[in-house]
Picture (cartoon, one colour):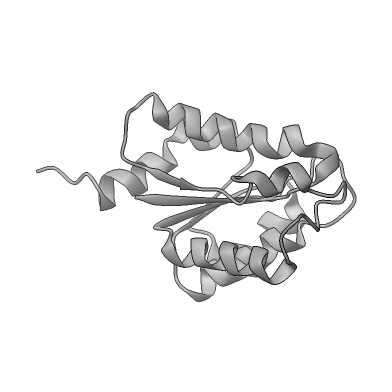
Length: 154
């Protein structure tokens, strides 16, 4: 199973932007499940990220094309709308949520912001909405998709 980890990327908040992703990946590495993690923060480009998180050593078109390819290849998308106190909206993540809905992929949205979880588009596109990574892991929502699509046993 391939899982894409969509979320805010900002050079000023690089630790927070990567920490939630690492928590999820580490949790599932301990289970030794066959999950391929697709993560826009993977790769050398992250070291050349501008403080606003909008540019790196790669052209913008290449960044968007790679992320869209990941969305197309994913079996599940987990999208975190937290901006870690930054004022810039998570525009890229919102675009990824829209693409995910358009191509009919299962989507888990992480947000505790009523402006997002009460929004009709988020409600329509999201298979599941949770307020935190903790709840995502506690409720075993990724497990649900994994066991139903990769590891069905009778």
